[in-house]
Amino acid sequence: MTRLRGASWLGWARRHAVWVLAASLAAHVLLMLLSMPAPTDIRVYYEAAPGLLSGHLYEVRSGPHGLVFTYPPFAALVLLPLSWLPWPVAVVVVQTVSVFALLVIVDRSAVLLDGARLEHGRLMLWAAVLLWCEPVHHTLDLGQVNLVLAAIALSAAALPAGRPVLAGGGVGIAAGMKLTPAVTSVYLLVAGRRKAALWSLGAFGMTLAIGWLVAPRESARFWLGLLWDTGRVGSVMSVRNQSLRGVLARLTGQETGLGLLWCACAMLVLGTAVFAGYRATRRSDRLGILLVVQLTGLMLLPISWSHHWVWCIPALMWLAAPPNRTHRAARLALAAWTLATGTNLVPHLATAQSALAPGDDYPRLLAWLGTAYCVCGIATLLAIGHPKEHRTGRVLVAGRQNASYHGTGAAT
View (cartoon, rainbow, N blue to C red):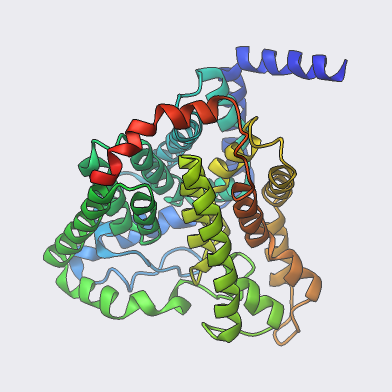
């Protein structure tokens, strides 16, 4: 009876998916208007980008916290048109583009997973629910570019192997905006798409050249100095930093840097990732391979703010897919992501951390709870690496359908 009621409710939701998504978006807008300050990262883009041309890109401080621009000069050039708009219009533009990017992420994840696009009802229902995952909602609250960059990476990964210029070019340009998407090039190599990987390198080089041409002084400052200053981005110890380095800093009570402890843990993560990637490659599991690359990158970077973890979207979709969720490892990872991203755990921990007096020891309970996203990442890698040679359904069919897709990839 419960299953019938659930199916009936889901059928109703699919028939009215447009209104469900509209209600979800309306709730987001209302929450921003009632309780949130102006999106801080949009303010940084809006106020700092004109400094590219005046030679003060990295000195401009924006908002009540005095935040500074931390991206390459090419990113400032791309974001410069925002500063030509009235402030309210700029906010609406960034929010609209980000919501569209969320839809693209869901759609492209489905293509990589099943070899087919979602029908509109399911697409909008996924988007309506995933809008409230903490990394997604936090990205929208700040006006960050994470959703857009993830949409570019997924779109590039989903392109046919016969289009290396477009796939590689998209990855390279995204990396020129913010360095983290560069890890997608590893996916292109693992998938046998060598030409696309080379094009990504060429496109990234083009962004460097454009940045140096337009603003040579700012480019020299960023690439030769500011790039390596992680303290300028934020505190590694902050619980909003969900990288392995941040986790170890909070557990030990001090910044461990790239010492022996970090190296040992990083090797364990890499070993798990290599095994999971190998298993996913054997299954022609394109979304699984991409998740292995992206989640590993997030864990090993010095700083991975919680809003960087928008890769929870394709992870949740992979784990919830019928052929995958039959395995206990996938169900556990799915439950971990749901708890971590659906309960706003990291913002709650950040509030508790901000209440600590200077000099106070970091509470052990908060430190262990602050491992949440790394735990989810490792759990997902283990689920992807779980033996699934007996998988049936659309995913296996998609893998067979895409055999020629990747067969030519090795020669590209």
